[in-house]
Length: 177
Image 1 (cartoon, rainbow, N blue to C red):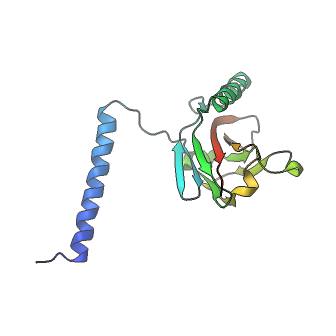
Image 2 (image 1 turned 60 degrees about the vertical axis):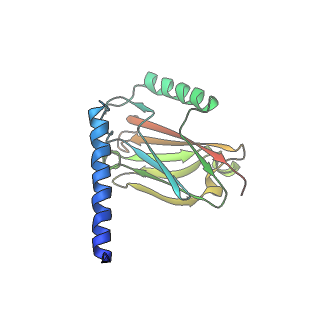
Image 3 (image 1 turned 135 degrees about the horizontal axis):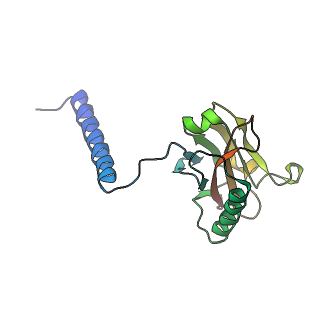
């Protein structure tokens, strides 16, 4: 007796759904918080990572003092290698995705890469509102020569330039081709 392709696919789906349900139940039962509605996914080549904000004020704008503290904390985390990291090679493409909650308010993103003409910054997304993906760009345009590139993503309402609601940081580590 042999199983048909449909039966095998159906069994596979049941296993995947069951595993997901068990995993979610374990997280809930262990007292972990539900995932944040404010997440960013960094995609580099064929890998990706999803992170909650590095700095967040429960949906309210960050004060000037909180923004300064956030930058200081990020600088220290970068120096200590504690930011979320991804390896990147010149042939990779880089893209960012945000949750609908972030896209509804608006967001922008850049790196400290690029060239002298751009002032050492490369824009991945500019005042994107209602857009959940930045698009994919060649890594060679976004990374810097130091081998460590900082990616900054900011949730900000384009109509209120001083209203920064959340900030994410990622570190790209340039690898040989």
